[in-house]
Image (cartoon, rainbow, N blue to C red):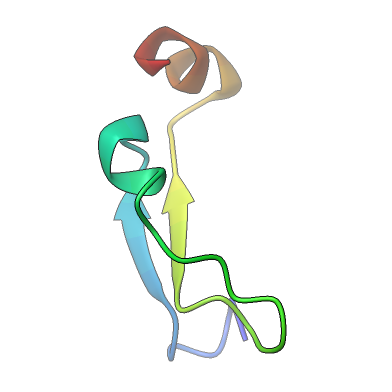
Length: 44
């Protein structure tokens, strides 16, 4: 699903990411990405 083109990909922003509903019975609608693990840690 992540590679199918159906999922949305958004920049990782903790203020937005924490509000995203986590789906447990289906695939996630949105994936959040960052440039690196260090970049994600700095944003936290």
